[in-house]
Image (cartoon, rainbow, N blue to C red; front, side, top):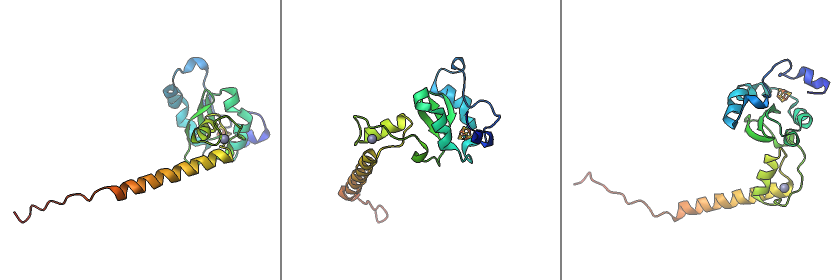
Amino acid sequence: MKGSWALHAPCQGRDGFTVRDDQWKTRADLKRLCGPLLPTCGPCPFRAKCIATVKPAQAIFDGIAGGRLWCNGVVISALDDVFDEELAEPKLRATCGTEAGAKDHIRHGERPCPSCRQAVREMTARRNEAKAKEKTDQPEQLQLDFTTT
Ligand code: SF4
Ligand SMILES: [Zn+2]
């Protein structure tokens, strides 16, 4: 990893953050081999720099960078407190402006663009509305009282 900041990162001098191609076959292998090291990135203040340096999506990276576990350049696991802002700038895609577009950004190691974020917000609101309506449409459950028989 380049940059003097890397000397101060919690992973400095530690192995296992990436694996050789002949060491793994499946995502489960990667999770087993690298997953236990993911918490090391927890207190790291350089997550965004780490991702910008490793460029996991372009490099089709396998291993840990920026609080995320990547497999073939795609995030397969992440710490709970990661931020989209730590990811690369979004590229505009044909799917932009849809929920699928937001997923595409994430898959490519990018933060979702504004129109994809808007699409996700609208979709979430519609789902919540539908759920609320479903609840109010449900007929009241028949109450059977056997205590008086
Ligand atoms: S984010 Fe994780 S892998 Fe990257 S420099 Fe920090 S500790 Fe190391
Ligand atoms: Zn987009």
